[in-house]
Image (cartoon, rainbow, N blue to C red; front, top):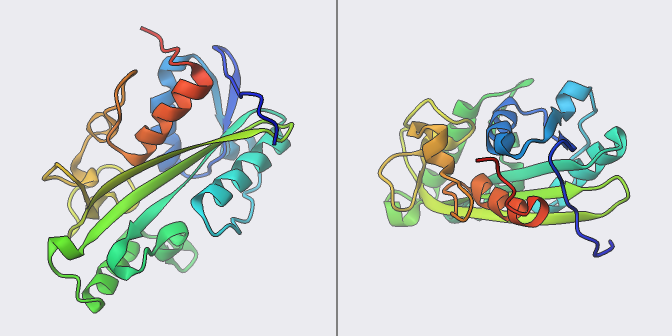
Length: 221
């Protein structure tokens, strides 16, 4: 890869390399102040590439480069997941697979699977139920250049799940310093990102790095 920076300006088109409605809503909310033309891979009818990587960075790159090449446009991809210490860092890059139920993803199934694994490992007290969410963003150009931005938030896995906001494993993850889960937080509470401020969620933290690098903090007031 070359070292030339990847920069976006107001009015530029950016493809969000996702078919996940929850992620799409979060990214559109985060990107709203920057005056970009946002379109998703799903809206463009782009195929979902096989995520064959074994790390968040590898999978983010696969998705971003596939979308950038197919759309001939700069693309932003996210690969994120839940890492639970007591069960060997799983589900990790296979987080979505843990929620697979037949031909559908059901995160109630995924959360139950995480809880069953924790119980089988004897992880019953909060100190033994540590976990983190990781979000790795990849910004890719059709010419092959890319940049990575990583955000991590630490917390504790709770049971039973609490809250019906957010998506995925949010209802069983309580971030450090809070007594409510991501599933009980509004979008503003969960992300709590603003220029010059570190966000709360893993995605907001990675997003802040992306803004500083690719957008130069150029936010509408």
